Length: 354
Ligand code: KG4
Ligand code: ZN
Image (cartoon, rainbow, N blue to C red; front, side, top):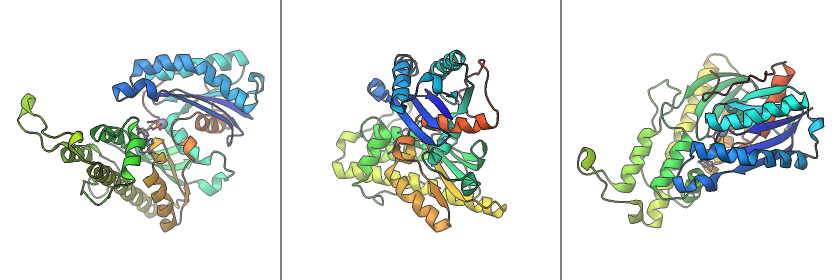
């Protein structure tokens, strides 16, 4: 069974062909980083227009790479939530047109659920070996923990109450003048720094909370970089800037920030796992997904966490960490198997499924 997946929720235009829900036959991603770099963040209107220009060549490349013709497709899948509405509409409209003209089912997929399916791509793991799993979605838009009972049955245990980790990385990178896109640049900067140089907050939000908060950490970093603001209200200003830091001060701050984020994530994972075990849920796997799973420190810590707790760990290969359409097409095969297809009135939503 061959499914074409489309993904256009943010600033990546992507198409992929996946066979039988697992084997990735092609995975094409056109990133728009260069278009948004001068603004230091994604500009929704620019993103929608770029999706429109890039989608057709990206779909053609995905079919060509897979050696598959349109007539061989069994279904067309598309990420229809969550994301930027104007961006989602481009992918969803294209998917509807393709499904209608080919006479095959259309399948809308939740992008967050798809991130947690990414670790299963290109593996032959049987579902009974994987689920129930503890899921960590860590990206530019989300930082959430889930109990995952099957690829499409997720119960959210906690989520960020302010910034997502990827967003915090992107903002920290701006503060430290690390370059755009921020996540990978800050990760690189942190490699040569001392993670113990600065004691930054690791917000736990109370004894039992599985939620996250990164805005306080962000502010703590800002004050380390620029000093405490002087003056009040509209008159307040910083007396220092990132340009006043030498290289080792910058790398130490980046490494200390990274350590604070990852310690927090790891403690919450541990807390969630303990809570599930107390409820009698025998978690088999830790599944992680989302752009921040490309982070070198997280990729070092998650397998060690799994080893300590006797869990199999599913961290996607780098190509399936950031937004991609292979995860969309893969997850869609499950929805197709259970007869969950969509009509041509498939809507788009800015939020994930609750
Ligand atoms: O999953 P994704 O491509 O888009 C969303 O669904 O949000 O994630 C993008 C996020 C960005 O915030 C980016 O800075 C972050 O993932 N990211 C990283 C790294 N690579 C990407 N964050 C930390 N370290 C990285 N190596
Ligand atoms: Zn994503």
